[in-house]
Length: 127
Image 1 (tube, one colour):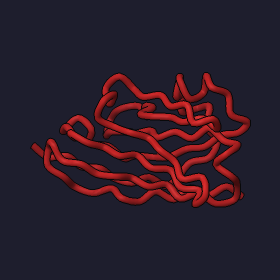
Image 2 (image 1 turned 180 degrees about the horizontal axis):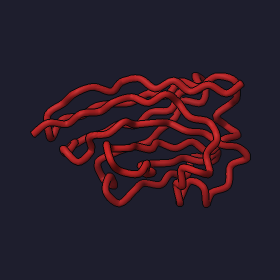
Image 3 (image 1 turned 90 degrees about the vertical axis):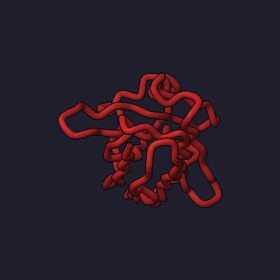
């Protein structure tokens, strides 16, 4: 059974950095599309960054140049490095996985296309 567990969230001032981790079990990252999503209060869940089984990445325009998605296949762990954080980045952040992996899933980052989800990790950015 696929399980995803996020960690690394917290509170930071604007301009600061955080790194989220997503530990996976029950499957191998090498065969899945993986994505980071976020949901702020009163807003829909949105895609932030994604990576496919070949290592191709995509980012939402709002985080390009500030966030970096990466994965450690040996340890089945996904990361999201977040720099230059803004107050509008405040949200619950989720990692999600799906297989088989199709590149369009990573580029589009539609939440409904991913079956497996972690419990979420809160990120709060204050001014």
